[in-house]
Image (cartoon, rainbow, N blue to C red):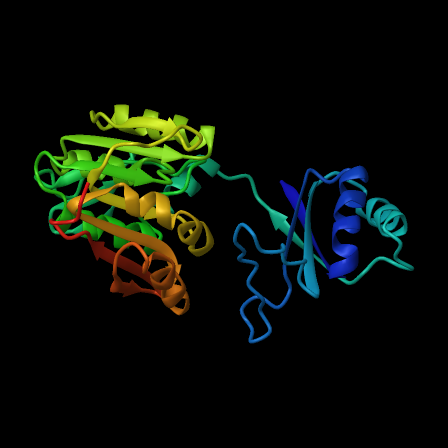
Length: 300
């Protein structure tokens, strides 16, 4: 049994209080938006190249303590160390012992992408044994099929990939898109990422699914041209990568970009305009997929 202490704190003091609580014996700390679920909720999303957003004006600091801890002493000490005149308002909740692995697994069910493709966690039986079933568990790298941008890309791949195609998955994360392309019959798949941990996860996931996906770090040059290029990243990196990604599309080849909010589509379309024409192919839960085609008569 543990005790969860939920304290209210202004943004400028939330981090100091968190550190003081750890020094006072807390087992773990998290900071949340105290206005979550209300009209005052403030998302913390950001992108590379943007200044990080500060903590919420009204923050909630959650500290987990052993049930035998002297909370009065710990909270008084932490409040004083963090510069509070008194212990801020707080509530207590009991946290019972649970099978945390089982609880986590229960939150991830098989995901139907199309009639022919499912994403199936390893602890589940595939709902349709005759479909393309990609075994993938939540992990350190982005991409389980549950996020709208991943789903948008997977749906597109199901229509775009033809047998023998050369496929580039730029920003491969967990490797889910490259694995899907390989299972759809691609002749060769290259996954590229900036994160070594993502490349390691993608390699493990590809092996688990019996597929071959070549993987490399983004610092290494990509010189080949591909029939299919897919990139599920974020708006700003996609704009910066426009010359590189556009140059990797073979004549007659197709490209799909996601990780783009519906309100950001024109920004990406404009960034790629000098190289090829993009259009919005689909939108899901506020996220967009942009698609483009390089004419077959484009010079090599």
